[in-house]
Image (tube, rainbow, N blue to C red; front, side, top):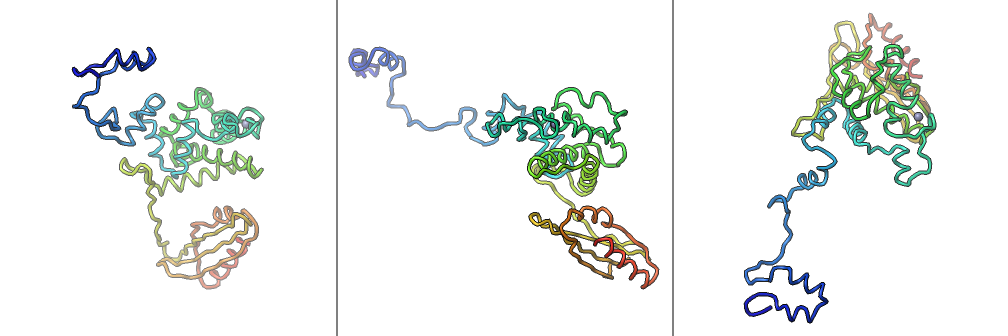
Length: 316
Ligand SMILES: [Zn+2]
């Protein structure tokens, strides 16, 4: 640099290639008032992860969109909400997606052989269609249910205030539950080789939807990622009635199952308890379906004795 603080062009062009010298010459000369370089967040003096994420995603995702509200406010399990969110974003590991990432050579559906995309799994596959047909009935199925794109299809049903054809559970809750169980069934079919019938799948979905519709409070804006589950409590039956509560467990590897139960009278006093191994079975679900929450009337000690015998027969 010269004594006046400008570039010494003669020295620059003698030391460097012309192209490099011109590049340096085009820059501002260093000054004694300059401060040391440091990293700076260009949009704000204060860096935040949320703002960085918004900047990264701004072309792909509108942070002001209320699409997420339809999902994160659903009274379903958090796992189901995440599943729906990923389905909406087309981020689930369908065979098509796995094939695109080089994880498999076969992008086809295990049911029908067509390309297995998310859309295909949830509504395009004959298996999924059988499930939806069973819900509405083939004749009553609205034509628009299977038309359009995946995203509006999901959001329209998740925002629906309608009631399902044969249940008081909100349609949005049952719809999310069915989508989740279709996805689970597809995965079980691929990994284990078992496949639920459409009727069984609907029954499971309905059971879960009823459970979550009653027990899960949708997350508030302050705790959007934590579902709050209300606590069930003892409800005394009427006089001369007894209440049966049962529970069970099943070993995921050996599939050995065990069921246990308790009988209480109308003031909550213990009457009878039982426990039994029910072998290698998936009948636990059946036991729950038949016995859970059943209230039974009894007249005397003999009647109670017979009842316990009947129960033990049921869980064999
Ligand atoms: Zn298919």
